[in-house]
Image (tube, rainbow, N blue to C red):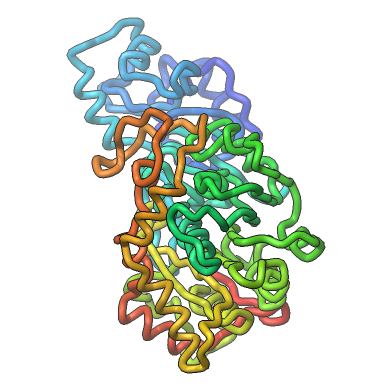
Length: 473
């Protein structure tokens, strides 16, 4: 159904001349004209520069046709209530229509649509656009959707309130605890990891999870886009905000993570790459190559250094598009999960894939952890090193969590939580009360890849290099 924009505002600045003329034409007669059908999306230039909230109301003032309109967001709470809309249009509150209005609102709204794979989209209600801008590197938006407050860059969901904790806890805690175990650490023993490098991570949630480890002494985070960081601090403080950005252990650098690691003389216990997907038009492809991984291995501490990267789609049952037939290099847009693993395996003794369900991404999401390990035996050493990680006893992980995990002061709690996650917090939690997803049982589940995915990974021999990049859809 085409959306109808009712020109309620007395002044609308539209960069698109056609849109400006439409509003100019309608404004003098907005009490008399029939509703104008007008199709728009979250990428409409009018929405790109102004904050509006789309709301229906039961009756157009001078017709019997049900209509809808676009109004500016109320600055007090970023949304207009149904009574606000009735007051603005009719000058009174009609309580008899309240429930009808709320019912209609649930049916009529702007839609947020995102391409997931060739032929597959996700579509959901778009409740509020809090921010939209063009940085030097990408389009940046913060919206409220079915999954709560959401960061979107270049039309792709990066992080949503509903499940961001699943992504960030899965990315951070397995490699940090594994670094500790490689160094001989255990609950009550202190030790590593003490230094962590984060590539990307503009939402600040990756740094939030790192700083929850009480062994940490220094975190270096390098992100190329200051716009993302500032927008997230303003609209998404629950991801970390100023409490993380200004943390005394935090060294936040605006710059190129690739260049930083190529030039640094510092070494780290763990390197966490929370970067954009390797898409053809994106800036992140150089951070997924064999050449970059070779440099990362040099920057890691030798005995207990661990590297981890997000690795894109890792569906439980891979779609045929995700893996090219006969390792066809001409397939420019596919899954990069196994190529990232293959590439890391050429540099490190072990490259271990794992995944977790991410509803807001519309698919399961993959990670790859890489490290060097020698148990003093030449017998199937690669499998032995991987098995130790995968088969860690839940009690071992839970004891480390209780001993090392603490709340980062000043980071507010999300309000939009499912029943299994939402709980009252005091800000002084420790151990398992801090984490909402990761524990000993969840650890083992992360590495339990499905048989179809394991078979698909075995068949994919592709490697990512600077000369032969592979792009994700």
